[in-house]
Amino acid sequence: MKPIAHIRSAFPSKFGIPRQAGLVKELKAQIIFEAEYRNPEALRGIEGFSHLWLIWEFSQNRREGWSPTVRPPRLGGNARMGVFATRSPFRPNPIGLSCVRLERVEWDGPQGPALHVSGADLMDGTPIYDIKPYVPYADCHPEATQGFAPPDTARLLKVEIPPEQLDRVPGEDRAALKGVLAQDPRPAYQRDPARVYRFGFAGLEVCFTVRDGVLHVQDVRPVPEQPGPRV
Image (tube, rainbow, N blue to C red):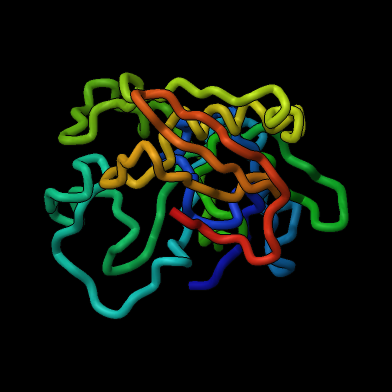
């Protein structure tokens, strides 16, 4: 297989990305096709669907061999579960699956046609291998059970961003940043209230601490020359 497209998102590294697609609906991204697949005919009819499935690669998680069990972040990074009972990126084949909302199709432009989507949980530059429409009558199962992964809505953090720091974030990115922070980007096994966490977002480096269920943004500044997750 070879990539048909790559995604452009606000995340230059893995740290900070929501753990599932759709958790932060304000997150915007673009799907840019490879030249070979940059054909409007390949997208004929796609605008009639509100959501799409993306099949992509965990391109930053390549490794030799595999393990039959992994430590899901949802369980604090301590308990082991079967790899096929989780959505861990460490799999025999590093394939990801995400459902995103199709906002619009950009038919014209130097790299058109391109897809504008929201709710994506992909790092900038992630290779995409296929795109399929989400079909509610077949894909939606309201009665489905969730195993050890119940909804995270009760675990959202309160986010406090000083006005002078928020002013450094472009207006169109503020709601998305607040949504990302509310999801608690920290690794599940790290809960040191004195620790300052940093991650890249939309060309900025965001520094924060978490104490008693409240996330405090300490600084928002331009990304250093060599950005990367530092925790």
